[in-house]
Image 1 (cartoon, helix red, strand yellow):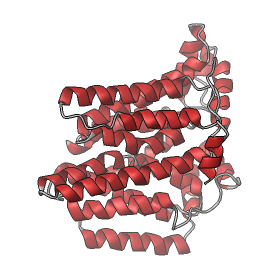
Image 2 (cartoon, rainbow, N blue to C red):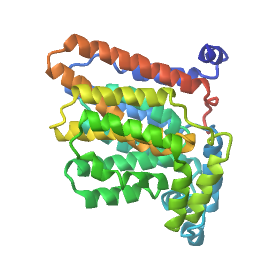
Image 3 (cartoon, rainbow, N blue to C red):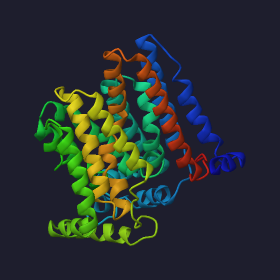
Length: 364
């Protein structure tokens, strides 16, 4: 109802049109070449929509303001500047080239979406479905927190190295991702869990343990002390300020739809994916760790939304992988029903996100 009221006001027409285009491109296409073209067109439309926006919440205008300051090498290499080096490099190049500052926004969206497109094209059994599953991440990060979106996009380049157990190369990719947002570093310590053969009972028990510990231990305080202990004082102070804010400091509810959705996907991974297959095993572990961290860090929504997104992002590949396994087992009817169920669920998710979105405007 809230979305209908907003839609009737005319403010959400551009968002509704974008989602409609993505849905139209879902029309069943048998030829591989046409499916790949439809996937490319989907991401091209998403890029143009994000890159041409001229409105947003605080982050959009902060990006333009901070970018305007990066005009000298001294600012570029200043470690105390309130954005990471990757952002400053883009801003410096844009300023030196005399381009409109909107080019900084467009460049970040280009990096993020091109990395995601490559990831989906190479690893998703159903790229067009993955595009729909990607929409909540698109509206939350590419359209709002673009630095985090870039970090997530770059981090997907490490997926290949996880499968190959090339942990040194994986670490380099994650360090590159952290040049746009330090929260990408959460992917470094969890890498050693990703190739472990997953078993249902220990996995489910660990979720119960995380729930119990979250009731007894302040993980936010623990993370704060750890970050300060390694010398990242400015980052620690920033996180502390966020946890005290009304916007991000409130607790993450156990019945939050994002947690329930991720938990549901994890349970489906246990039920349908083959834990003897390397990729199935890795995707199951991503979903498992995402659920565990969502629960463990639920004291403050900030930690859940920013940190676990790097893990739950792999659901855009895990869900098509689940449907692929169902098809291989001959459960075609179940596969089709589940696919429709996922499409419906994610459209409801997107609708709820857009009900609170700012009015879309072109930057021109």
